[in-house]
Image (cartoon, rainbow, N blue to C red):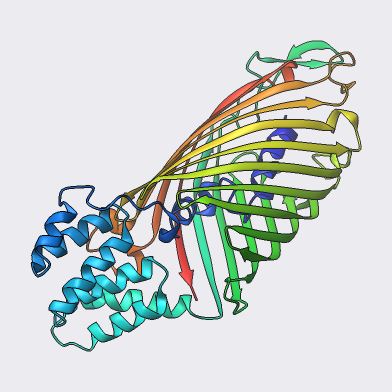
Length: 459
C-alpha cells in the first residue's frame, strides 16, 4: 500500500510548475493560481454601460459634475468595465487636472488594462505633486514599481512555501480491513494517520522577445520536500525544470515546453522523467477561453530498498487535457477540464488507460483573499492482473476527490502588519478522496488537511 500512496504524491509533483491549465496544490501557492485566472483584465467581458446604480444618461447631462463622474467611474471599475471607468476619469481630469489622487486612480486602471506606458506617465505626474496623501503616494509608488518590472525585457519571480499537512489514511489502508494475496483475503494493516512538514520553492523567469504580439521565452524550476513525521519511507524530495516559450497569434497562443524531473523517496533515487508538452489556447470571447494540452513523459522508476518492484512501472505516459475557462464575473471563474491518459509500463498490471474530468471554481473575495473549490472524477482500467494480488481479476477503479481551499494575506487579518510580512499568504485546505476499486487492496478513502504560508518575490 505505501507504493500506491507514493503514486498519488507523484501525480501531484509531476504537475508541479506545470501549465496554467493544471490545478495547483496549496504548496504551489494557490493564491497565484486564483490570481492568474484574473490577471488579464482586458480579457474579461465588460458589462453594458449604465448597468448599476448610476445611469449613463445622468453622466451625459452632467459632464462637469466631478463627484458624480467619480462615483460612476468607481462603479464601472468595481463592475469590471475598466474602459468605461477610465473614460469617466479622463473626463474628470480634463476639467480638474489638479486632482492628483484621481490621477493615481487613473494610473491604476491603466495598469490593470495593461497600458503600462500611459499608466507610468500618469503615476509619475501625480507623484510630482506635494499634495498627495501618504497612503495614496505609497500606493502609487508600489504600482509604479510593478510597471517598471513588467516593462523589463527579462523578469522573474520566486515563491517560497512552508507548512504542515495531515493525512488521516496515509498508508491508504483498505476500507474493508482486508486485502487480497493470491486471491485469498487476509487482514490488512489499519489506517495510519500521519502529519508531514512541507516546504517548496518555485521560480520562473520570462524574457520578452520584443515582438508586437508579445512572444516570450520562459524557464521554470521547482523543489518540493515532504518530511513525514512517522512514515519515513514516504519522505519525498522532488525537483523539476521546464523551458519553453509562448507565441501569440491573435486569439490563439501556442506554448511548447520541455520538462525533466527527479524524485527521491527517503533519500533514494526513485523516479526520473523526461518529456514535454504543447498547450494550444484560444480566446473565444473576452470572458471565455478554451485550451488543449498534449503531454508526454518517459518515466524511469528505480528500485529502492522499500520498493524493489518499482522498475515495473517504467515506461511512456501520454495525456491529453481539453478544457474551458469562463470568467463569468470580474472576481469569479469556472474551469472545466477533461483527461485522457495512456500509460505503457513494463508490467501489464501497471499499464493503464485513464479518463476523467476536473472542475474548479475560483473566487477573489477582496483584499487579497480567495477561495478555490475543486472536484475530480477519474476512471482507470489496467491492462492485466497482478498475479500476487489476484491472478483472475484485472484492476478497475473510480477515484473521486473534492477540495476546498481558502487563502488570504496576513494584511487581511492584521491591517497594521509590517510591510515585510503583510503580503505572506495563509492557505488552509481540506480534501476528501475515495477510490472505488474492484480489488480490496485499492479500495479506500481518506481525509486530508493542510495549512501553509507562502510568500512571493518578484525581480
